[in-house]
Image (cartoon, rainbow, N blue to C red; front, side):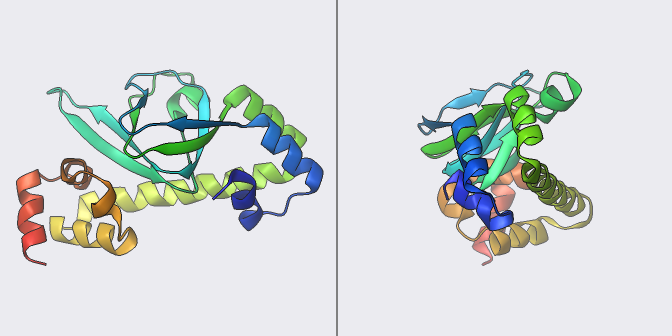
Length: 187
């Protein structure tokens, strides 16, 4: 979904507000396999995904790549630690499918939020939705079995298995690829 169209599903913008937002964001295309940022970055970009799929990941102490989260159409992604806390963000971002995003630097985004009052409400809604998703993931890792986590993922994101390599899904679920194969064979 196009950025202004998405925003208008959440809040109603005037023509002037739509123009201000459209001119502030830059549309960008990234082919599958592009690393948008490496772990330990200080990126100040905020990106809205129009089409495609991005995963955030980190490298653990053993040097293994671990999937932290998936961001698909109609979602925002950014390096929160860099943007809000002026710290290095431990998460990198990789494009898993050809992806189109709308990008803006935080400084410009902040100015836009002051210019378009309704935009602040939208960002609060987006922040709460994202916080809920991270809270759900933490709950599942602490209190659910691997089978329950897999079922939750496939129930809530039914096409995820068609879009994401199984190794990334296994690391996202906190299991080995072998365990994932065993779970999938039971279905």
